[in-house]
Length: 94
Image (cartoon, rainbow, N blue to C red; front, side):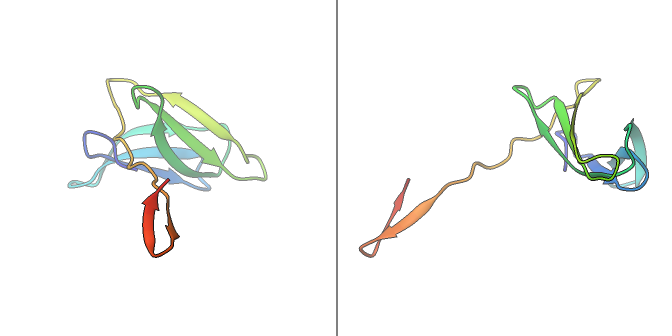
């Protein structure tokens, strides 16, 4: 996941943490410590995209965590999913 500053957010499974990485220098500038060892994925959400959602897997996890971002850190909006279906050789948006 990439935030609005262009930093990468990476779940480190087995280490119990999520890190924020400055991509050009490869420097970690923030660490989110978790109470479980196996985070699996991250995404930004909330009204202002200022919350980081972290999924985890078992055996000690299997949950979803929400972390309010400090220092004005925000995510980027994701493209919305669109569905199309084919009817009589015509594609229509639903």
